[in-house]
Length: 623
Image 1 (cartoon, rainbow, N blue to C red):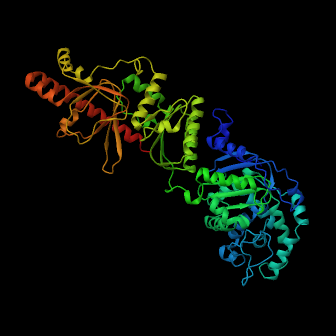
Image 2 (cartoon, one colour; image 1 turned 45 degrees about the vertical axis):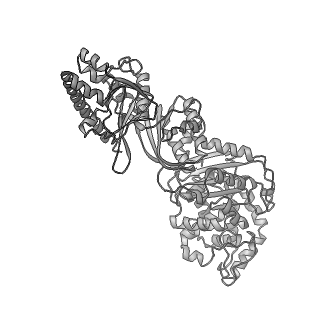
Image 3 (cartoon, rainbow, N blue to C red; image 1 turned 90 degrees about the horizontal axis):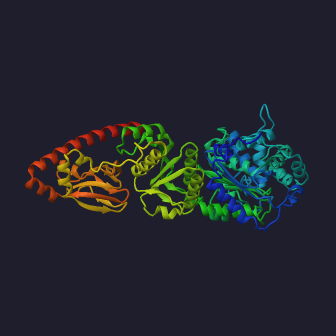
């Protein structure tokens, strides 16, 4: 039975996008480690000794069911000692931890995996990851009314892998022929009372579980089932309960890599299990599993390339258990189309109609927390998924606390890949230098605020779908909405009193709490209006464009600014200073009165529009 496909794999077949940045990274690791020639295949049985040492594969399977693979990931190999972890889990599920612990200890032995010895005093095997403990685990799994022990074991492995796995008759026959040392362990266990009765059938079933054939992808999904607290993330099948998985992973941490387990936890820092068939599975609980396959083994019986690959991934992607994210929360805080949370830029009716029709073609993705590997993978996958349906994606990074160094090139590659497929990705970031850090081609558009980014996307949608009457680049803005409320002579007289000023993109023009600094009439550029909530969060209220004015609202709040105005782009404005306004009132009171009436009317209409827009925004944002 073939593996169920992930959504990413199904979409990859359409050819819209290339492989994920995660897949590209794995391909690079495979190529860089392929020339490692140390070690040799196991000589324990002919099927292993005669294995081709060249195949090398790496698979990452996430705890929510996404698979990334590179190299020889479809070649079958026998589980061998990797089976020990899953049979131990089955025994725990059947009998409970207390009953299993009465027969098998959980202490690191420091001995070779096939050492013929039991714990002094108790007579128990040191742990279930050495052969003595593994044979005991197999014996502890009972037959059922329907299936024999070996069938139950194989079925449990299959449920973890998400497909029906088979036992290799060839490997099983050779394991049987070469099994004298394990038989000695079985009879030693029987003599100590750990196995009750004849151990012969348990030994044959142990040989059978070692002979189950898997691919590197199978192994990754088996590991992902453990990472997902015992539930296969693709099929949703709960194979083991969370308590069982916790105990299994704990034992894997201290005993899973034979007598190299201590060094492994220092270098790699992941619970893992290896097998002399060339496989390794490593698990980051709650997040992912890594599986590798390469038949050449080191002196401990671990795959040479597999160990190097796991070390590399742990170091490059911060997978070591001491480096995981500080806060366990979803990386994707929210995602929504821009028509559900518009920029609040005032548009004409024609432009509003176009944005209502095409607003779902642009989507905002808000990220949070730490962009370590799992967060980065989730972010990349989310953006790619959205880009299958939407032409524009706005990625808001302002709530992201930490961005790992390796995340930047992955994000850059994803953006370039989507750009090549005709999609546009822009970023909202507090750091104005983020675009240079990404180093993408063409340069990444980075905005200081969500409203500014959404305005840019809305303008792009209008350029693409709108006619001349609603296309920003073709519509000549009113010189000044405020002055348009006055007669031509009054407008000319006031314009003569203005002084031109400019601000660079990102620069604050007016700050909340600042004294009234005059009326600013925007000639070019965009200005963001925002305020701080009592909790300190910055909330964007509106983006003002050419023809609009700001600063006058301070006159209604005790001559103090209650909002902050910032330049989204380079801004030019003409300013009526407080001193100029005072002079006009003294020299031409009638003109001053007409100006204040125009300001009042403009203010009332703007406040009414902001209330309407805020109501729409609040309703649409109730996701």
